[in-house]
Image 1: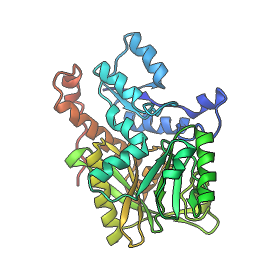
Image 2 (image 1 turned 120 degrees about the horizontal axis):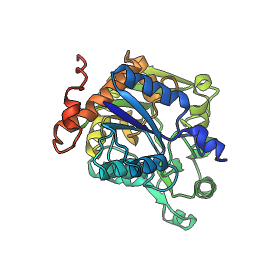
Image 3 (image 1 turned 135 degrees about the vertical axis):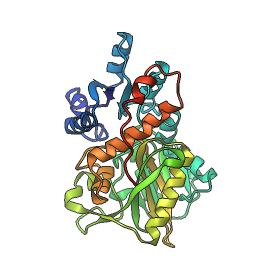
Image 4 (image 1 turned 180 degrees about the horizontal axis):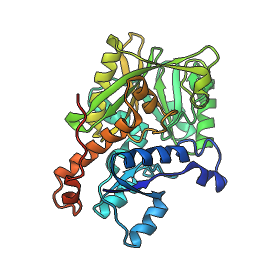
Length: 345
């Protein structure tokens, strides 16, 4: 198969003058090289496309691919992660990971929590502050936790994100509103253990690859898996694969959220335990980082004994199963003979 690769290369944006935190979610060249090597190891031919603007030009020039491995996140707006899959849908080109609806919904953490709450999945109470005047409507008990409503990689999360007073709430919300130019998600602070659950697959076939606990060392910013802690994780964070009762409960909650939101192929669900020790949904990462050494999903897989190539293979297997139920796609017949053998259980 010819696999196109869509992504946002961080170096390109840094060269255009964007800052380090603005571009924190974008991919390093080493990530693209690792994915490409894994796809080629599965017998595919790869073609680097790059960001959405490059995709538009190449589609307009008549280029097509059997499938696109999409990890492009975009830069502006709530629909930025949905742009590439929406374009590919227009041209009937299959792709990995979730569709535009899921990627638009899940980028907005507040809208996502409304759906999660409707699914009766545990998640901390919350409020959305779109302007500083909205603070007067927040009726949640302290301590609280505040973060930008549509960012990842810990952007906007710092030591002051745990909030004890109205004065702190006012100051932190003003910081986030000014710096990120987007609403602030305010949640009841959960004091318990922090987990991330890695998932591969789609719908009923989705399965957890493991549950990893995030343990902050004494020299880390306390109680928050912040932007700084993530950036310096080798110095301040320990990761541990866990399989106790709370971890199994976290996996159950994570799979319910993954399936309920309609996420596809692979990603992560982040959870934190409440004062009774029960894991609650915090957020979903349907386009989780895929750097072999630095990304949480890959760290989790390494701890679980799953190689990087196996992870990419499972993602591809999930995406290719959609072709079996889409006989009108022109590439379907070609792909049938290229399906990799399923992994043993």
